[in-house]
Image (cartoon, rainbow, N blue to C red; front, side):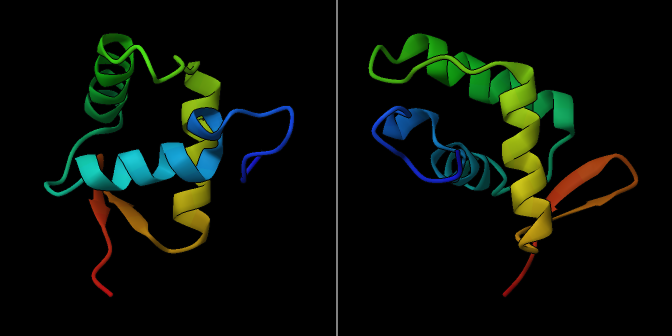
Length: 81
């Protein structure tokens, strides 16, 4: 789930989706804005598999757990490390 496996394509792995999110979070964004951006990018790129909202939330949870993002006052931000 987190890493690609024999049954999970690399572009659907949570680590890949999370990396896409971090690229998009160069500027703070709301969860809905980030979801729209990720969904739009994946629908325009034929190599990227579309993901569901629950898969998006799992990737976002992973980023929060490892301390890569913070959520304050309705806005997601990358943490400074």
